[in-house]
Length: 72
Image (tube, rainbow, N blue to C red; front, side, top):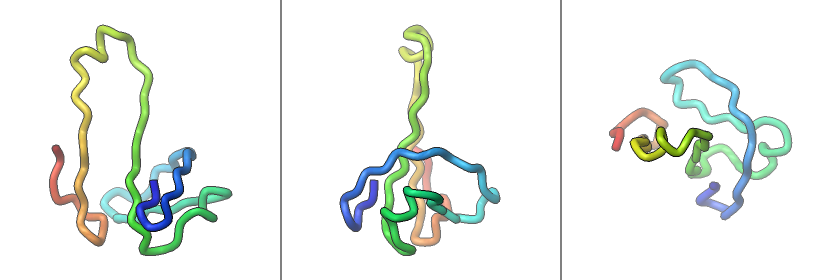
């Protein structure tokens, strides 16, 4: 979700360098964001009902350099 322009894009993930703070969009998704845009990244998964009942999602808050501030 791009806060700056309101676009919503679903795409794949390529693992990057740990703790680099880099968020990079490739391919067609790259046309929907500019460097410096604020984005919300949402992750989805599939699980059985039994597992979902105990699932605790994580919300990661970062600073302007995408460095971890807090995990909720």
